Image (cartoon, rainbow, N blue to C red; front, side, top):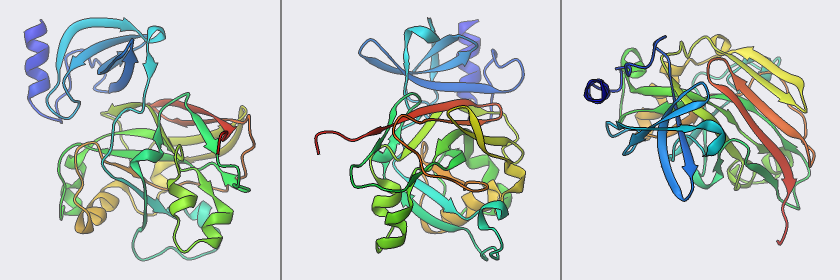
Length: 277
């Protein structure tokens, strides 16, 4: 049985392991003791994988309880790309752009589920932005739109944390979008979902603040991946934040922000004030 599982994993990114009864697989990255590993999440059980997630990982046969590990950001991107103003509900009465508006976040902005969103002491208007996040599965450069879906490994949930005062004041959005902890993602990367029709919902202290489907994106996933790949070579594990719906509000220290993507799970983070700066 274990040999069969390993063989299935080696077929390619589009193949699903034998345990994926519904064709949907949840991959997690986690810390157990002092060891970081990838695994497949089934309910409350993690099936450990050997090697990197994008390098034909093999099942080790080891299983762990979800409660016994710390979930980390589900991948370690070399690049974090984001699309702005990609829902009409976020644009308001403004006209959509002719092409996706791109900006970058730093890999050091990435944190995982249950990690804190650290509010710099001089931040005055820090907002949540719940989003569907695309995870790239193989090197992508100058990819046509009709082939772009093959380069998507899966999707996860993300929070494009944004300091609005800095967005207005700074030459570029470096501080506003790319500061440390301003890019929570997780809890899992999920394959086999219809990424162009998923509910994206943001809750603050349990209250729903954003709720819209990815079918309402102005530029869909394939268009975004193709467009980005014209200018930036995407590598396995790179992520693209696809835009936030509706309106956003300022977060306060102690707020618990939950971003839930249908079929993926809940990304939960708490806002804290930076200390020691």
